[in-house]
Image 1 (tube, rainbow, N blue to C red):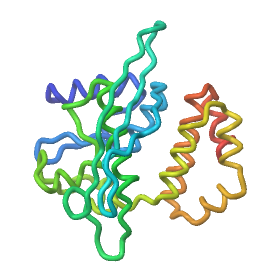
Image 2 (image 1 turned 120 degrees about the vertical axis):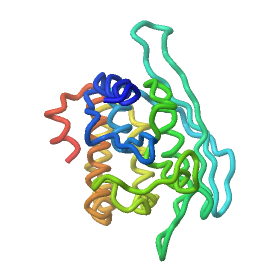
Image 3 (image 1 turned 180 degrees about the vertical axis):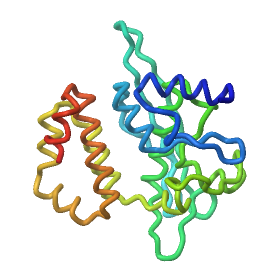
Length: 225
């Protein structure tokens, strides 16, 4: 394993994530799944401040996100911030009748960058959500090389409903609050309208939040189902 890959693998294993299946290289650039970073954030106990909207246009959003990683001792909390940008047809492409969710994409990019900074992977690996920038040549042209990566355009197919539910989950500070949200009639109706893959991702996100709040993993699946 090349030196950079070993460094990435050593950091991922701290959070129970394998290198294989989570990271791949595209023309020399290491790329990691967004969902993997979400799991790591939950495992590490990273929490985010309310995002700040820096720029708001019909086809563009720029969002500032600040994340906090608890330290082993009081007063040793690490804080990082980053900007997420999404501009239709520049660094965020949509095709056909696909809707453009610039705010959700900008927030996901900013959060991913903050997570990478907090776990000391920034500069070693990029989130898959940067794929549009890669295709524009920053830092490298992207062509999917992993079966799980699929069509690069599919990663833009994020719904406002998904983003809203995840924001609400992030804001909750207790196991009961997360459980109540996921069992709420309106939440169940919203989940029922989502594609199966998106629905499962939101449920997994809720389960990860339960675990981060102290609920045993074996019980989290039942409480957020």
